[in-house]
Image (tube, rainbow, N blue to C red; front, top):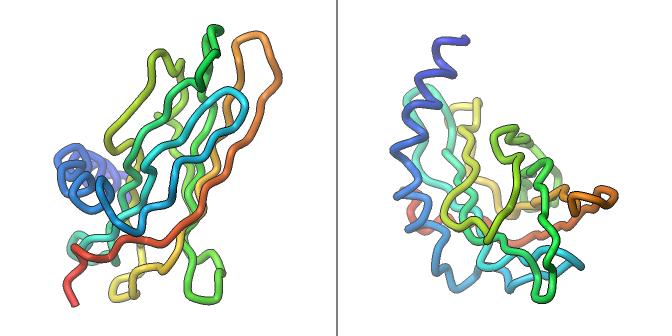
Length: 156
């Protein structure tokens, strides 16, 4: 199992280009959301055909930047992704520990991905993303964003 995860993780490094195409300019992508210190912009989740033996492959793409007027460093603590079915029930959830670190001027591109372990399962219909962050000198805060999963690159 551990070897399979390493193989998948290695393959994930090649997949972000697919994720950018799936999430980047989606007309159904949610609009930017702002919390006090960070702005989430053009965040979307795309589903594509998964690896052999797995279900759909999900990529989280978009941008995260400090909000206007924030001059203190921002620290990102966690990114949690929930993939939900048409009844809004979460059937796949993951947290990306490599997401943690200083935000700096911002991040853009694809910064989280996961394969559904259930082969043959249909892609989710919606997502919920939770980002935990803080100013270097402040308490942790949470921002959430939800929207439709982009399945345009998922073969029918």
